[in-house]
Image 1 (cartoon, one colour):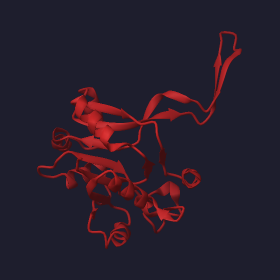
Image 2 (image 1 turned 60 degrees about the vertical axis):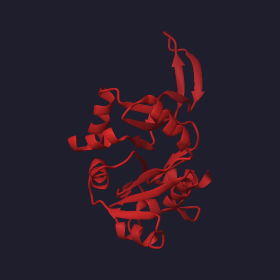
Image 3 (image 1 turned 180 degrees about the horizontal axis):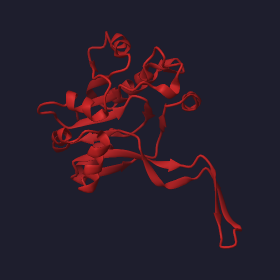
Image 4 (image 1 turned 90 degrees about the vertical axis):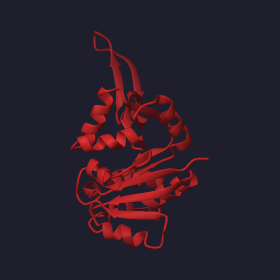
Length: 218
């Protein structure tokens, strides 16, 4: 058994989902009648995540209202800022190892396996990655431009960030040195302190109407 604190990043404006997000924060946009974030909260609780903080910003009052009767979810207004500023605010002081995830991503990451991989890596942080899949059919050509192979929307030899970061205490203490989350990740990478946990299960990020329709279908 284990206990893990989690921060769900929910501060973005969800511009690509408008008009659905004109008066609703993206995590509250429904998928088959249920807000995205409810799926995430339920998933975390089933994996023994006991302390959940929602880092709100855009229309944060709607998130506060949504969780008003849930004593196990804390909603914090972190304003309109970069991810790293939200984390600095929420992880001030002597913060423990923390899970950080996105409030618009549905996945079935095994958190026990993720934490085990993180601890075995001895790295300061771990990011969960998912194989990049092409949206197009891919042709291989020979020197005379004859097609030698064709694959319809194949999985590529690249990996994308899907969140589910595990930050150790040392990584959390280092946050203050950086202005953006990208700079923070770049520093970890350059020092070989960022481990990648490969996830091949369910993953969908809901940034657009097309992705919302895909989530509905799945």
